[in-house]
Image (tube, rainbow, N blue to C red; front, side, top):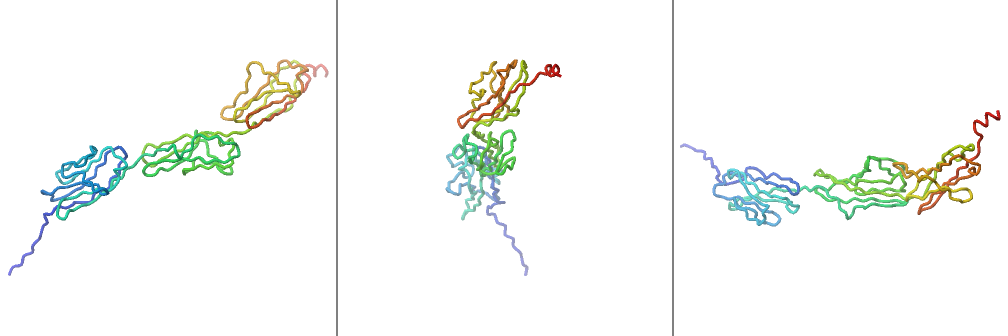
Length: 316
């Protein structure tokens, strides 16, 4: 008696592998692939899982969206095309074979979105009094959710508590306590999530403080007939009104259009008073006065007589 072993080969259609998940940027095209075998007269359909919407059946597009298309490779690999991607396209998609019962598998489409900084929730330019505290905020959207980095313009360090300086800080909020004039300037809120382009917003921090005067030489000697220039430095914001006066309160006019000269990169200005061919009436006390909306201050320079070198030699 002979025995035979029978090998049953299924002609049923099936899937040759899983649907690979796809990640694509907003506005571009995504293609999901579904590979089948033994399809014969059966048909492949693509569906949106969450809405159970039929998108395509075989080579026919059922969806009303012009962005949806379908292609195949020898009826083995079926491609679902979605063009001009929107965030609403994110989700699960099903590849289905119309067997009885139906066979199906799913794949996920993720849409990545470049960062965008929101006006609402992001600080505008700020003005603050010296000594106060302030929080700068930065709100951004994107997928994945963006990371926020703070930097200062021109690679200046960010000054945090106790005078510690750092090149950058992470997080949506930048807290500055006890603001001083060194904190003034432009801050950059930078949003990035690995999807180009990275975006930034420039936030200007203005620090207001009353005038401060620095006089480097409070006693100046000069002989009759000589020329000299008295100098004082003022530092203030808003910009102060600065002038010279004598000890009797008389304002000293400055000729030749000599306005206070601002020192680049700082709040300081230099106020100069030229005195030509000194006479005895020029000797005495001069006040450098500086005023703005937050206060006023003054410093003094005393101009005293000195013998000229020629007189000293004659007396000797």
